[in-house]
Length: 341
Image (cartoon, rainbow, N blue to C red; front, side, top):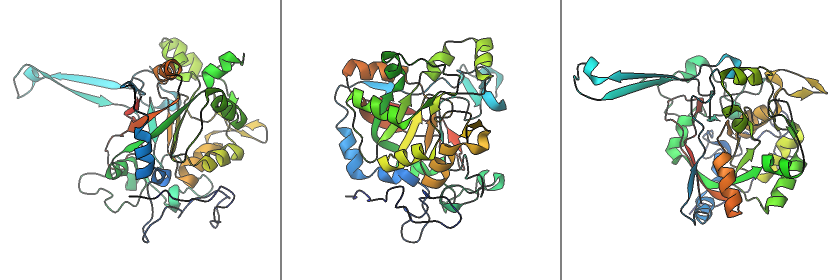
């Protein structure tokens, strides 16, 4: 039986030379080996067994938005290309079909691996590694069997992700309290507001929870046609959690195993630096979560049915499972996530 790790608070994390306070490198290392799982280490046997108790009603909900839900993804990323081949046109000469799919893993619901966005001043990913295109492209026979890079395929060696999911339905909270906002603006959700949502829902947190925040972003975008989507995404803005060190500290001190949401970046975009809007390189939570904490981020998840189910059952916790694609060197992946009640 595993024991639940006792990890330092944000302010108590030991200093790492050249890095800001709040760097968790080395915290989860074992037996002289560098860790590649980050905060997924908080999903211990005790945490997982406790999460099983959430499966009571026999209800299960997919959290995966269609891969082709965005006609033209933002930031020049490739959308879904689906090709179908009839067996009659192949040497098989039979009745049936194969298909192929191509897409950027950021074009719909996804996990960001701990290699996705580095600490920008040092170009380092989680635990001080420095990924490169050459290291991440792992053809047959050149896979990272030594686990030197914290990529998503390594999640399979620990059986994927199983734990207790917690939904904070900010979209519902905002409607109840007459808080109006455009999902395609940089509306910033504060830590105080997240705490208020939790209190109103009667939700408390446990170490190892998977935090999921609903803003209504995918609901709004999914109701649009291609031209409307292009106009909305053309703002290059998205609502989300406020990207500040204070937000990062709150998340770390709650000891979540992972965070996810339905917004495009989990944190509000663009980031603010000294009151001025800046570019992607100044994203605060991406740098803290992925590089410094080793905390995976899920984005563009479909949370509408989850929110409806939580409201109907009047509980916002559930058994959560997720298994990303097992692609050697995988940087992003559809989450293949389920909420089980």
